[in-house]
Length: 244
Ligand code: PGA
Image 1: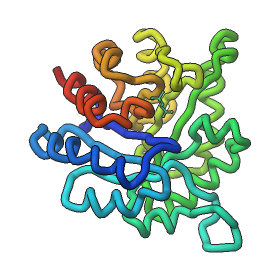
Image 2 (image 1 turned 30 degrees about the vertical axis):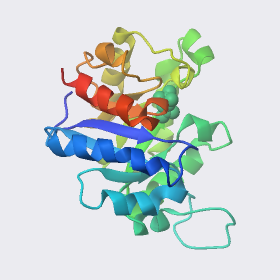
Image 3 (image 1 turned 45 degrees about the vertical axis):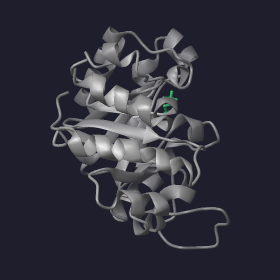
Image 4 (image 1 turned 90 degrees about the vertical axis):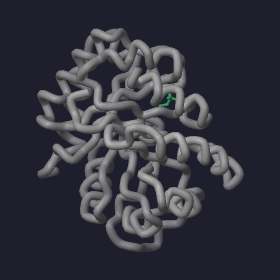
C-alpha cells in the first residue's frame, strides 16, 4: 500500500435484491469496530439497489458507487439508460467505468473517455478498469494494451491523480486464476509511472485464500472484488486478512 487508504470495492455485477442488502449488516458492524481510518469501503450494487443501499449506508463510513453510466451529461431520450447526474442524485460518490464486461459489449476507449469526462463533471469519482486478454498476455502485449487504454480512456483528463485505476486482467476475472505476484508488482509499478500519484487496485478472482498472497504486493492500494464481495463473511475475511 503506497496510499493513505487501502481500498476494498465490492462489485456486485448483476446480482442482488432488497433481501440481499440485509447481509450487509454484518459488514456495517464490522467496519464500525475496525481501524476505519485505514480502509475505504465502496459498494457498487446494480442500479436498482443504489437508493435503498444509500439509505442503509447513511450513518456509516461505507461509500456507494454505480457500475456504469450513460455517456450523456444531460437528461434525454435514452431508453433504459442512466447518466452520472442521476447516479450522483441517489447518493453515489463513485462510478466504475471501462469494465471489461462492458468493453466486450462494444464500449470503446472514446466512449469510455466521454463517460469519464462527464462523470467527473457530475462530481463522481472514477474507478477506471483496464486489463489485457489472455491472448494479449501470451503475445507479451500487456503493457502496450494498458498504456493505450489509459492514454485514450483518460485523454484530456486533468487531475488524473484522483482516478482510481483497477488493473483487472480479463482472464483473471471470475476464473479463479490470478497473475504471479511479480507480474502484478511490475504492472502496478508501470501504471503508477504512467499516471503519477494514482491509486492502483488489483481485481480478478480476489478471494479469502489468495488474499494472503496478494496483500504482500506492496504497491497495490486495494482490491476490486466481484464474486467474493457478494458474501459478507468472505468480504470481511478478505479485509481482515489484508491487515494480518
Ligand atoms: P471477480 O470479479 O472478483 O468475480 O473475478 C472482479 C471484477 O470483475 O471486478
